[in-house]
Image 1: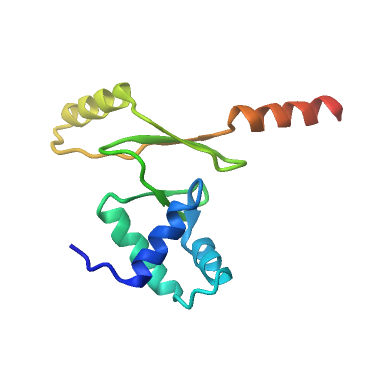
Image 2: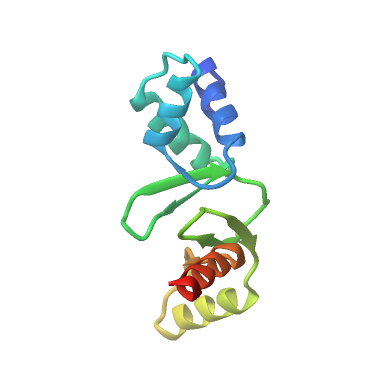
Length: 136
């Protein structure tokens, strides 16, 4: 178990106050804007530790950037993420779990793990896009 330092608590607090997924660089900038002297490398380490202990979710954006957010769910789960506004919804996906186990077994794999994050547009962003297209 990692020791709780002021830096780790600062990162955890900043992550808790962020609504959706955020990059380490953006979180670092947010901390600096509030006067924190924390270094970027420390932010990266704290985020990796929080993700490793299940206190933060971690995923890769469609462009390959690592993003983090405070985990609000116990156990394995998936996300629906709006590509426009960042709205994130935690979902369980029984069908995905069943499929992953089945495909792994079909190919002789055991102890298979998976990550499923679905990126799209939320209802609000879809409506804004449709309204913009209608007025053009």
